[in-house]
Length: 114
Length: 113
Image (cartoon, rainbow over all chains, first blue to last red; front, side, top):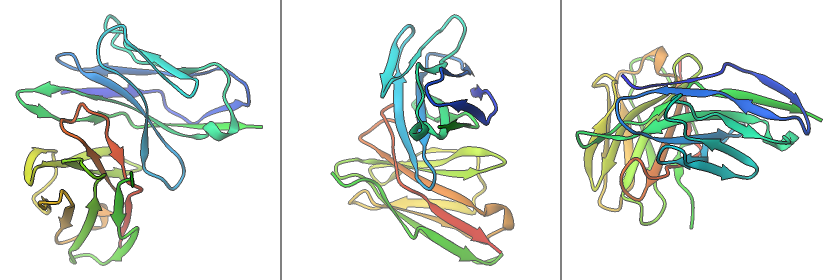
C-alpha cells in the first residue's frame, strides 16, 4: 500500500541554521504531496503542496520539490527561527478508483534554540 | 471565514462507554474528514463524508462511525470505548475532493480510563 517515510526526530537546530527534513513515499500512481505543520496544542495547518512532478511548493521560507525519480519531497528552509518549532508532517493523497485516502508520515519534531 | 471548530476540546470517558464528537466545517466546505492521532500510530484516516454520504473509509473497526448533516456539520461516534481509543481526534474540511487542501480543527482530546 501507499506509505510515507519521514526522518525521525527530534531535529534540534540553532536559530538561523539550515533545515532539511527528508520525506520519501511509495505509491502506485501520481499523488499530490503535502507538508503540514502542527504547533503545540493546535491542529494541522497546510504549509505547502505540490501536485505534479517537478513542482516546487513554497511558503513562509519553506520549500519542497516533488521529485518523481527519487519519490521524494524533502522540506527545506534556509534560516530557521524559534517560532518554527513544531511537528512537521509529510503526506500524500491521490485518486484511485474514485477513492482518495490520505496517508501521513509519522511526523518530525523540530526544536529551534535561540 | 471562521475556521473548523470541534467540540468538546477535552473528554474523559471510561471503558465500555460511548462518545460523540462534533465538527463544524468552514462555511461552504462540503467534505469533512476525521483522523485519529496517537503517539504510537501517528495520524490515521478514519473516514470522509461528502454531501451527507460516507465517501471514503479507513481501516478502523465498526465501533467507529460517523454522519454528516445537511449543513455539512459532522459527528463521530465511538461505541464500547477501549483504552486504546485514547487519542487526539482531528476533523478536517475541504471544498471537495481529498486532494484539495484540508483545513484542520484543533482536535478533541479523548482520554479513556
